Length: 460
Image (cartoon, rainbow, N blue to C red; front, side, top):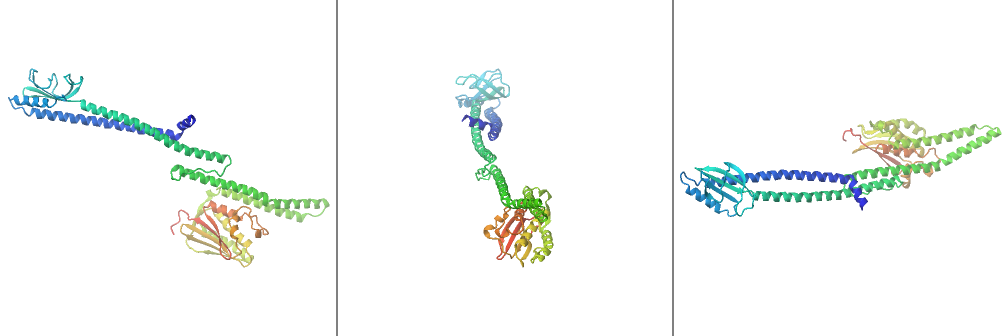
């Protein structure tokens, strides 16, 4: 428990919550002090106004050379305040008491504050007074400050308790929120620890409320998905290399051993050396293709991306391979549906490689008389390219497998190739943010590649 508390105190979320709580309390205290000062000033102003108004009401009863009405008014007002909350004093020029419930002595004209000791009044009670001359006499009206002081004391006490309560709630709320955030951060740390220990299937739990931590966690989970896919791919590549390259390597070894035996017998080995050279070239091509796929998947070519017209790439492929298809007993044509440029953001060489691989696959695996068509069109915010043929197609259950490295259909194992052509197509498409889908055309197969439209392309 102590360790958990210490961990919470050291956590960044709790420190941030505590900082904001402190700032909130300081702002509350500052605003409260300003309100208190404004309230005190307003109460003092109202008291001064009441004292002046009462003085005026009493003083107006005086008529020239007629002191009797003034004395009566002063005594009447004094009688209305038995608790002496209000004091009235009327003295003559010599300072003798004429009327009222106290005798003012040595008070200047105008406003003044003074303390007085009177029967029934607590010692040290402060009064706010207004003094002035009425005829030849001196009139003083004073109001007690005890009510204002009591009100100010109540406000200060209430404000003090409110500060304590708000401080406690702020710290407790900050600790609660910080503990929730800390638990989520601990979940992220635990997930990353699991990943570092080899558990690539570990994922950060999400609350689903769409906050910033969920957003970051989703991005981290997506990165972990990508990492897991890459590691699985590397494992698959290792297994495929060990499995699929074992046969050509064994065959190469057998050819070399046969050549060595012939050499020992003094026989010619030119045929064996030619065959060995062919095998070694095929193995080198396979490793080169694997390396190229790895570089593409690492995103090393993104620095060469530019906005380009996909129509031009497809037309160039059709022009290059039209003669090759004709010599092979097949027909290849390009159908550009939209005359306007179909702009995509990408690497021209890689896109050329993508379409060349798809065309070569169709030429290699389709019989004589096959019609192969290249098409490009814009569909909403996508540029769609299709390579369609009326050949034998690919079985539905095999359509995702053919994108795996070194995977080959049973019907294709007798034809040249390494089983990396479609893997390279998928890697290039992923690098360009494009989708690759195999569709059955009955008869034949269509490879549909959908690219996002380049940002500067005009709306369709």
